[in-house]
Structures are given as structure tokens and as C-alpha cells.
Image 1 (tube, one colour):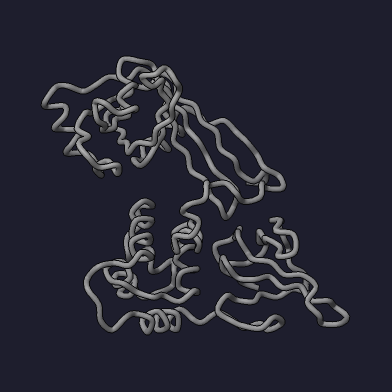
Image 2: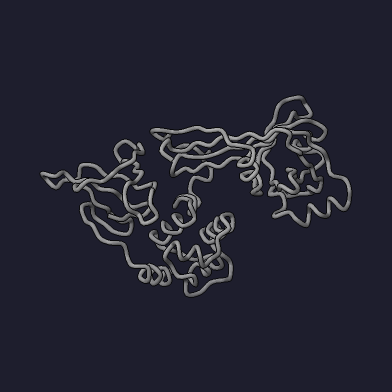
Length: 306
């Protein structure tokens, strides 16, 4: 028995052949897709670890009626199916799915060739997806999500207006503290973090900012009259985190330290050259603020058996 993320596990009644229970496979424990699986049951929406018995079979996402069981297409067939889904014409502008795939691939540090190999698809079609509007099949997206360690919903852009972490908690969660080195590793990936400050009116505020870690300092750009600029000259808290919706796991890192404005022209120029992006909020945000952490702590939630 082999499965992919998004497949259904169907358990039949051993006496009548009537479906007794089914659920979506939301977690794999082996790279080859063999059991056990984390299954979100359709009748309770709970996620449990399942070792399928002889009365269970896999219903793959690209196939139809309950009670049928087929093998997934071979890699070449998947590639051919994906190729046929590509538009025959269009401008050289990636669609939303392609942009999300490319962004997640770069975030994980994967090449197109490695991603395509993991997803068992044509590297040429992956390149096309990232650079042009495309309409890939569900099975292609599921395999891409699996290869990138994300979810089908995330690649489709679903739930963008919903706060993270709305899934059910693990049955046996484990919360552990992170050491300083692991905190530094997680923090060192540039992205979006949150800075906690006291605003000009004295009220507490938490502001998301695009940040970088350069020479062991957290740096971000803002405007002199912004809420985030209130951090200058004070000790502040800065937090980054990640939530894995499919597996109900995640981590968070908290840095505490003094914040100062960067004024030396050479230092400002160096920060601008090494920045991965401009502030998403737009506008004139050319004031660089640096935070040198004096305290670095973190926590991670995983399944107890990991």
C-alpha cells in the first residue's frame, strides 16, 4: 500500500462491503508512501495515526467513486498529463499558483530540477508553471505540495484571510524549548516578523515588518513617523514563527534586545544591497532599524513520537 498527501484512506466493512469510514491522508511517515499515515477522518475531522489493516485501501485523489482502488499514474504519465494542462498561448506572466510554487521552492532552497524530481513531473512543465499562467491538475498540485513540504490549499491560495492554526491539535503533542543555536538558524531566514513596541500614545502595539538578519543583527526598514519607528532607543521584542497547518505543528522564536537607527551611509548602503526585498507596505521607508538580541528563546510543537 502506497499513498500521497491528499489521497483518501477508505475502510470497508469486512462483511457487507459498505464503506464504514474514510478520511484524507494529511501526513506521511515514510518517503515511499507506505503506512502508517496521519488521517483526518471525514466524520469527526480528527487527525489520528493509522496503521491500515486488510479492510482498508487507498483512493487516489484523481480517481472517482468510493470503493474503487487504482494505482496512481506512473511518473511519465503524470508529466504528460501536466504538459497537456498547459495553455497553448499566453503572456509570459506567471499565474498565482506558479508564483506560489516558485516562492515556496526558493524559500526551501530547492532547484527546479530537484523539485520536479520529488514531484515526479517534467522539469520543463514546472518551469512553464512558474513563468506562465497554467492550470495544473489536482494530482500535480498534490505532488508539488508534498515535494515542497506545504499543502494543496496553500499552493491554491486558500485561506488567505483566515488566521493560521485553525486545525485540530495533535493527539499527542510535544512542546519543547529550542536552544540558542536552533533559534539563530530559524531566525536567520529572512521574511516577515513582528515587533512589539510602545506606540507614541503609550499603548502597546505589534507590527509586522519585512526583516533581514545581517551580521547577527535583526534589521528592517520603516518610516520615521511609523509605529515601528517607536522601537528606536528602546528594548523591544521581535518574534517570528511558522505553522504547518496540515500536521498541526509549528515553531516560534522570540528575540529581545535594544533597537537603534542605522545612520552611517556605508552601513545603510550595505544593508540595502543585501536586502532580499523592499517593505511590502510600500511608500517611503528608508530608515533602517537594527536590533541586537541579548536574549533568544524559542519553542517547537511536534508529535510526541517524532
